[in-house]
Length: 157
Image 1 (spheres, helix red, strand yellow):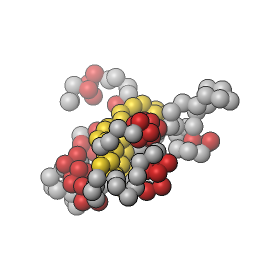
Image 2 (spheres, rainbow, N blue to C red):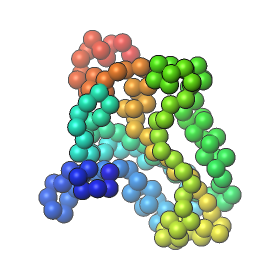
Image 3 (cartoon, rainbow, N blue to C red):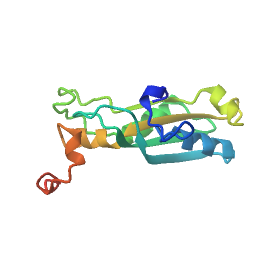
């Protein structure tokens, strides 16, 4: 979403938001620690419309920065956030697991650039498309159904 071909430009100086990550950076730069936040929002990308893609969708990103944050904290948070009971479905081919988000530990250099001492603080971040979660949770085959406002479809939920 950082490449020019992935974005919508209003003019040569204004681009529609391609991700919610800038919210995380602004919070980090405020210097109020510890940080535990989520950043929901609509984003826009130059994507072809199909069953699993849309040029506009909603993201939610999470960020935690504090003393002694480890990968175990990230894993525990995501297990609670994305718990599906391990039963399996047709999307995960019965395994109980499916890739729905990106995540990782905050690089020490990113902390430094935001004025946070990486010797004292660590953190993690994650991001997920909300429509993608709805597709998996309700076993919807086509994302476009979410936007068509067909009451016959919507009454199922």
